[in-house]
Length: 319
Image 1 (cartoon, rainbow, N blue to C red):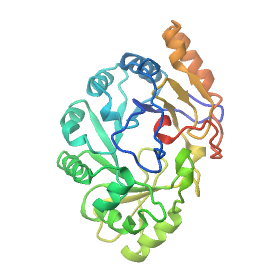
Image 2 (image 1 turned 180 degrees about the vertical axis):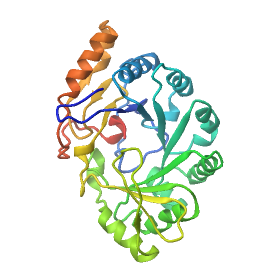
Image 3 (image 1 turned 45 degrees about the vertical axis):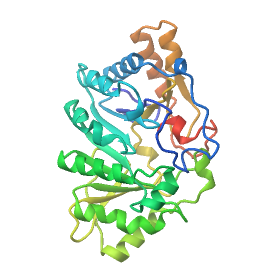
């Protein structure tokens, strides 16, 4: 069991496979773009597999692949298949913008990926293109339908932002009325260029949804994650709220993040990290790396404080 200094069991690893993305969402990528990492600075897929194997030997039983956009990473399916064959194979999920997902869904399911999160901030094609820089909403909707047909555990992640998509909140929640999905509203966090925008609190979102759809019923929380789930009369799915700004969930945090350049971040909001890539490339054994990970996790902050000091945008951290 991997335990931090606060006694929290750490059993969830988020793995950023790349800092590249096929979209340029305004709150994730600054207008001037970002300086891409050199290929040599990125963990190879073999190195990623090795880290995951070490982490599962320490008790990690959930792994989620993120980016950038994870599906733009070459040979990503090969990596996921190898993870599925590990002795202590974790439950796997992927967070994607959905643009390429329709082409990969069958391979992901074959590789035992059952948890798929799709980022979707609007159902309006014009707003989508303005927000992401691409006319790709139709591709995302095809991917959502593919997930529904294949009965995966599908969650749609929405970041409500004033002046951009606040008019879409009700229509996005309606997807959980019509389909067996979880539509989750995630409060905007002041990371990098997101500081230029003002998010809506989930208290505001929840009030609006209650006014439109009636009294909510709280659902049992699944998987020990940070979301609070509710449902409304006539809904077949659920609506979730992840509220890092107004209702911090640090006391129950069970995760660490591996960035694509090989840093094990102990907290999204902290610069504190372990340089796993340097350990690997200096010839450290699995046992030595495991010991370094255990020592680092003991330093995981008790709470985030959301004082982002490492200067990265979310695309460089891994959402």
